[in-house]
Length: 254
Image (cartoon, rainbow, N blue to C red; front, side, top):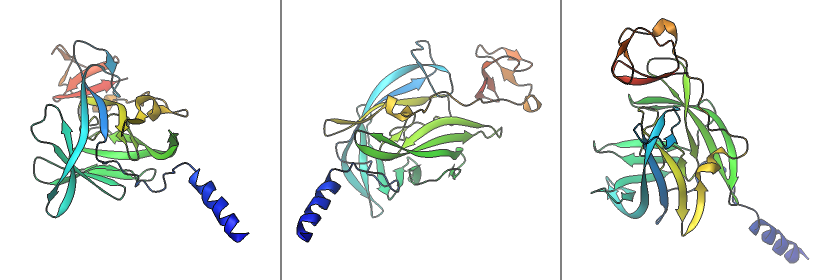
């Protein structure tokens, strides 16, 4: 009788879907494919990025092929068709690291973060995990982290990305675009393993999530005189909604 109960228990466990517990689902598996669109402000404005700016898109495909050892650590090779050299990436627990062109290791993701955790990317950006929940896609539960960016000029938080455990980011998959630091970003269309689609763009916003950006206000008290429109004309203030150039950087007033 005990043996029968044990067999039934193990059979029941076998039918349970995989659940994310701590952010450690594997992301850098051999043969993993990301189909991504690189978004840049341009003439052919077919897409809109998380900043609400119209963009043109350039499709790319990234594939994990092989590995390489650097300083005693094993990295997976992330390849793209027009790259002379692959990007090196590795996973350690819930964290994904990438080897940079400056011969240093840099954090790309930490899927184990909790709400209101802060992530510092050197002098590039300060990210805040605004919300953490779990999304189930194709029978697998994955942690979902809503990522906000704190501007270097203002204290406002801007919604810039969604990180999915074992997949990457909506705008940064597979961690190649710093959408919170520039006007360019990405759009992860699909993530595929062994011919099976694991995740797609619409899955990022499943179960009530929206892809509307946060209200990013520019306080009048912090406006400076060196403000230009996209045609290069100097203006006195940001009285209307739109995209502007201030101190050589693009800013959005909503």
